[in-house]
Length: 466
Picture 1 (cartoon, helix red, strand yellow):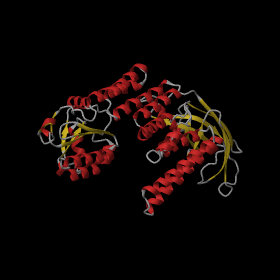
Picture 2: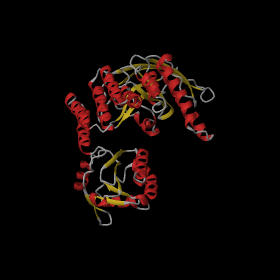
Picture 3: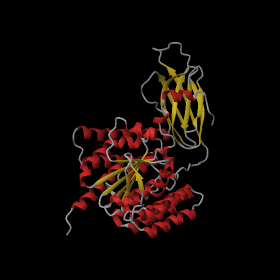
Picture 4: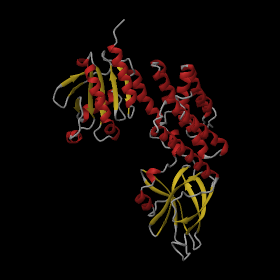
């Protein structure tokens, strides 16, 4: 693949951010680990013409057809062709990963059409288009027909849910009906378009979307997902939780181990071993979780999951719910000294964040409302900015209400406290109960579960003792 000057067209119209590229491959990778499948080659041919009402010359040479990908390193040309006088073209498309890639048609530097192409090894696709048109390209191939069916199903599902909300019928039974109907259609694509990329995506999504709605069906369908499905790890994770609700911890662990036996590559075996670690952590089985983390480190030492296991082992030993929260002493923005033991008898919401973090910024209103509602019930909200520059911290506060106690730490203090609380993603929050013990940890956008646990914790403390 080669970098191309034509890629500026992609950047100018901003299409790459909106089109999925190799979407289903990402779930099979560990943290920071890239998949390395063999080279994928497919073929595309077609004809581009112009409506006689727009151009009566009927010389269709010079249309450029481009298939490309974009990542942090830049934009790659996967396939490129120029039409002949009849508007015909042929090209070979080569990609590192199978997936869905942007397809652009341009002429004389102007983008005339943006669409997407399924790229799968051995697939041969074609299309004919008369410009200008607002309709999607009708790309003929089994893979692209399957992807169109998948997109249409998802669009209809989203529209039906929107209509429920608009009509004021957003009750649980109505939503469950829509979920079940969409999941059934997605699942049926496995039979209609067997072996296609879209059928694999649709089958996995049909499993994942019924989590919490129909656990028995979820587990039954999970077993039918093919071992080479690149979303198999996500499916196994959902199935583990469903099986735990149906039959308990031992059955759930047996399910994950069975899935481990089905996959052939160490990357996914390691990812599934991490799910065994999480299962024991969820059940507060400290010794078992530590042993599972040790197995993960020693069995897959070259995997990035080994580093994940190191962090998990620390959390298991020191940060599981019920364990004493690591002590700290900090100085607030107003100059007061706060120690964790001085807050005994109150519920503490400890919040690690960075002023420029987008997730935290979106949560500010909900955060403020939560504090205003719970402060009178003995809640202390202590927010620790990991941004050492006081100018940036002050700028974030400008014109923005942020109730609670605030600490701006220097680099050394921030690093030490983040290490003790195993903070690797921002925002990260901990609930600490009135006895100074950890009640829960919440990472990233897990704000609603934290709200629910805080409400339960405050209600429990407020209930009269028997």
